[in-house]
Image (cartoon, rainbow, N blue to C red; front, side, top):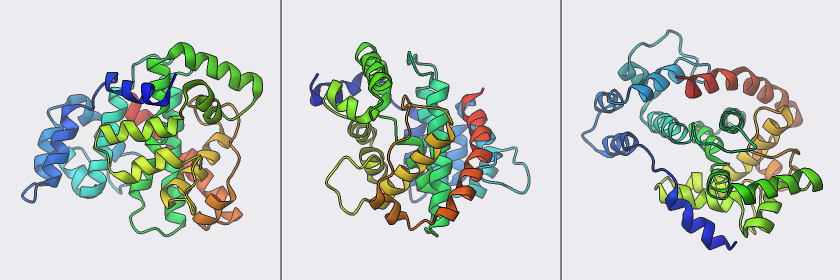
Length: 280
């Protein structure tokens, strides 16, 4: 299979719910308001429930429980509102589709834990506005879903080779598909018109490129992915902890002493957020 073939076939995957596009248009409108966004979200009961659950989860740590979407979005803020709506939209699209050897819940458990870890890393790095790193972590493995959904037989063979050879799964993807989930994920996010920072993080989080130094978002997601794989929280198919790339580690500026609090934050919040996003 050629790389262009699997990338061309991503058009066969479901589109994002229209509610996300409407929310995005409302947020981009200079005359738009959080109240208008809340009214749009209210047209989708499932998304309303998820937004409220996540807003009241450990992710945001609000001092009091919020009962209305408009109140939740007002507290969270405009930028984070778009991230939250996109996260709930993507998970709702890919929640019930069969993946074969890997359960969809396990896939999202891993992705959500990476999101929490990436946000924690960004905060340890004192990055101004760490919220985009949460979404970048959530979407980093999204390119693996087309492999599972569009070519389940080839993906099964890839996973068997990964188990038998104990090689890196993304390297075996290159062998079996002619491309990697990073490249496919970037193409899928571009098709959805998702901002470039998330495309970059998806494409480069394993460092299989000539980019030096790493884009910061890719370096953060690389480290977050290793932490979550070490903690064995969910899986997108990888059986072995990937090798830490020194250039990515140096890019984050983290110290070894930072790993324990990041891991504790990840363990503490990931299950709560997974339940909020995955359960009706």
